[in-house]
Image 1 (cartoon, helix red, strand yellow):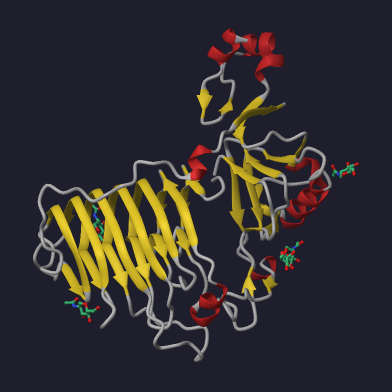
Image 2 (cartoon, protein in one colour):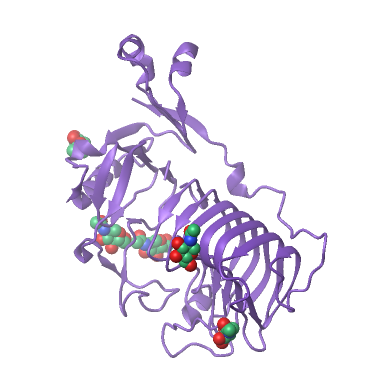
Amino acid sequence: MSHTMKLCPKLRNAYVCVISIIVILVSVAECSGVQYQAISCRKHSAVLTDFGAVGDGKTSNTKVFNNAIKNLSKYANDGGAILIVPPGKWLTGSFNLTSHFTLFLQKGAVILASQHESEWPSLPVLPSYGRGRDAPGGRFSSLIFGTNLTDVVITDSCTNTKIEDCYIVSGDDCIAVKSGWDQYGIKVGIPTQYLIIRRLTCISPDSAMIALGSEMSGGIKHIRAEDNIAINTQSAIRIKTAVGRGGYVKDIFVKGMTLKTIKYVFWMTGAYGSHADSGFNPKALPKITRINYRDITADNVTYSARLDGITNDPFTGICLSNVHIKVSEENKKLQWNCTNIAGVTSNVTPQPCSLLPQKEGQDCPYPEDKLPIDNVQLKTCSFK
Ligand SMILES: *[C@@H]1O[C@H](CO)[C@@H](O)[C@H](O)[C@H]1NC(C)=O
Ligand SMILES: *[C@@H]1O[C@H](CO)[C@@H](O)[C@H](O)[C@H]1NC(C)=O
Ligand SMILES: *[C@@H]1O[C@H](CO)[C@@H](O)[C@H](O)[C@H]1NC(C)=O
Ligand SMILES: *[C@@H]1O[C@H](CO)[C@@H](O)[C@H](O)[C@H]1NC(C)=O
Ligand SMILES: *[C@@H]1O[C@H](CO)[C@@H](O)[C@H](O)[C@H]1NC(C)=O
C-alpha cells in the first residue's frame, strides 16, 4: 500500500490518482478508493448519478437530491449513509438532509443554486423570529436544509459548527450568524455559541464576510475567526443590531485577516432597525462587549472603521491590535467614525479615533484553549 500512497497525491482529504495509464492499470484496485475524514464512517453509499442526476449546470437536480437523500434516510439506524456528489455542476433548489448522513463533494463537484423561486419552498416561521424574515408568514428554505437532525456531515465545501476551508461568493453576507429576532428571539433565548470559522475566502461586494446579527436576540458568544480572507467585499466582520433586539454579542475573537478592496474594515451598526413587528420592546437594549481583533492587513480600503453604538448603550471592550490598513484615498474621508463605543488599540494604522485610545504593547486576547468541536476525533473512512 505504501507505494500506492506515494503515487496518489493528497488533495485535501481525497486521494486522487493522476498518474500514467500504465501505473493506473497496475494499481487501480488499491488506488480507486477515496478517503475522507469523518466523525463516523458510513456503512452505505450511493452516487448522485444513481438517481438520475445530470451535472451539466443546466438541468435541475432538486428532485434527484431529495429522492436520493430520502432513499438513503432508511439507513439512519443501519450504519448511516454517504451520498457522493461526483465532479460536475449540479444545479439544484433547496433539498433536505437526513440524520446519520454525509454529503460528500468530490474534487470538481460544484453545487449550483437554482435561480427559480419555485425551487425554494416557503417554510413555516421560526418561533424565535415571530414571522418570516423573507416575507410575512413564511421564509424560504435554505439551499441545504434540515431540522432535528443528528450526526450530519458535509465534507470538503464545511463541518458542524466548525466552518473550515470554504470559498464563498455571495450577494449577501458570506456567513451570517444569528439567534432570533426581537421579542421572539428573546423569548426562545437560545444563543449561537462556540462557532469557529477558519480559512474562509469570501467575495461579497454588497455585504460582510461574517455578519453577527442583525437578528441576535438569543445572544451570540464565543465566536472565533482565524485566518480568513475577503476580497472585493463591503466589510470584514460586521456587528449589526438595534434597539429592541435585547440579547448580546460578546467574546468575539478574530485573529488573522487579509483584506483586499474593502469598504469598511471594521463596521458595527447599532441602528440596524428592521423589526419583526411593532411589538418589540424599545427598552430591550443589546449588550455588545469584548470584541477582539488582531493581526489584520487591509489594502485598498475606503473607510477604516464605522463604529456606531447605541446612545446610553455603548458597545464596550473593543480591542484592536496589530492592524495595518492602506486606504485608497487617504485623508479625504473620516477614516474612523466612532460614536457610543469604548475600547483600546495597539499598533494600529491609520491612527484610530479618540474613543479607541492607544495602549501600546498590548495584544488583544485570543483564546489558546481548543473549542470542544476541535477535540472531536475524526476517523479516516473510505469508499470505492
Ligand atoms: C432506493 O432504495 C432501494 C432499496 O430500498 C433500492 O432498491 C433502490 O435501488 C434505491 N434507488 C436507487 C435509485 O438507487
Ligand atoms: C424539508 O423539510 C421541511 C421542514 O421539515 C418540510 O416542510 C419540507 O416539505 C421538506 N422538503 C422536502 C422536499 O421534503
Ligand atoms: C423537531 O423537534 C421538536 C422537539 O422535539 C418538535 O417539537 C418538532 O416538531 C420537530 N420538528 C420537525 C420538523 O420534525
Ligand atoms: C480599489 O477599490 C476600488 C473600489 O473602492 C476598485 O474600483 C478598484 O478596482 C480597486 N483597485 C485595485 C487595484 O484593486
Ligand atoms: C459618522 O457616523 C454617523 C453615525 O453613523 C453618521 O451619521 C455620520 O454621517 C458619519 N459621518 C461621516 C462623515 O461619514
